[in-house]
Amino acid sequence: MTGLRIGTGYDVHRLAEGRKLILGGVEIPFGRGAVAHSDGDVLLHAVCDALLGALALGDIGQHFPPTDPAYAGISSLLLLERTVRLAASRGYRIVNLDATVIAQSPKLAPYIPAMRETIAQAVGMDVDAVSVKATTEEKLGFTGRGEGIAAEAVVLLEKAE
Ligand code: MG
View 1: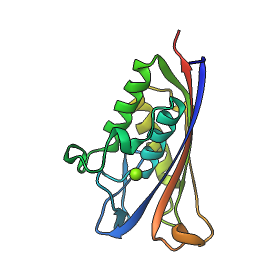
View 2: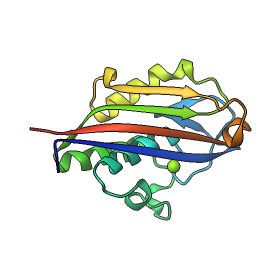
View 3: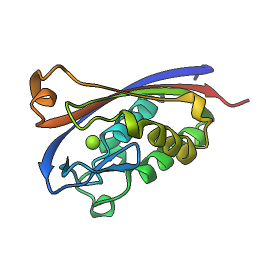
View 4: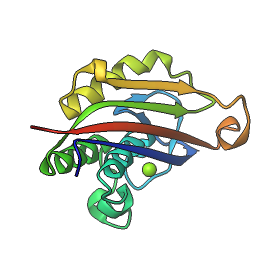
């Protein structure tokens, strides 16, 4: 493999009453949350997929199958840590990552600093190299109607010397 690798990730989860909303490892009081086998952290799932994509190692569903009871309710921070270790085992470290959460509500801006800190700490990166953004889709589509939440991520890896 060459010195630099880039990958993208995208994930969606349905939202339902009475579930926790966890984004970037941070629990956000909302009253609705992601329907998922794991904790449904759509942001971290997109980041994991970006990492796996950069390494051409498949996707999160292959590495952490939703049919495996071992991953029931698991914190996606653990999935992220394992994925980063996998990259490290191939000789790669993250240069930077950039992610966007797409949701009509709640307002995510107040939680973004905590998400960046949590992700940076989990993967052992400088917080300056971890970008998290949020947007709505102007009440259009499934995110606009509040039926679901989406996230996309881009990660750049470099071969550690
Ligand atoms: Mg997911």
